[in-house]
Image (cartoon, rainbow, N blue to C red; front, side, top):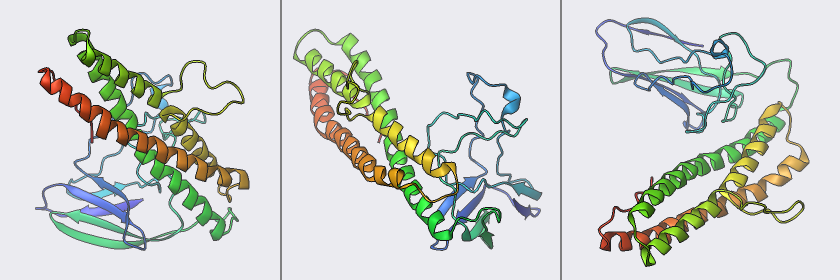
Length: 278
């Protein structure tokens, strides 16, 4: 719970940063951030949901709540637990809890920064050692970092596939149409497993959906309780990270080779180029 006072005559945006002992920004907020709007397609009563908060830049005394997490993974639709609290149900986190320790709160108003120390302590009812909590955080952070890399790829692949669909409608049969179809098939294979494969007990087909799902499953296991990771979960993480990096490399290869070559053909044909989100 962070209270701050803005005096008279102060104008402009306000920013709030939470920094760890190394000075790294754990979470940042701005009064210019858009306020998220609830998804109208959610199949839960709207009175479950905690109203979104906005960092205020109004004069006078203000209060802001930090949920003690790193920033959520961008672009992930909010999901809510069944254990609802009336008008105070937060979405399931996609980022790890911060570790107990020393932090710094930095408030910037009117171009001038102010800072105060903040100490986070563990719930005294939890008897897990700091070393076990540190291991839990380390592995959770590794999985979180992979999600930050994989989720933008999902958005980029979807946008690229949509562009290909429109180009296929405008392209007559021929080499260019064949190459568009081939790229569409390659993106489909990168995105999801082929229908009917793999068989039960067979080798897993490496793709974006499966890899992202495994990353999320392990992350949820790590963050579910304040305990040291189980040996089985910890042992699974290197393989999942390895697969995540392979998916990232496959996407980079498609961008630098397949899409680049296809854009040369599209330019020669006078058709729009495929614009890939960076």
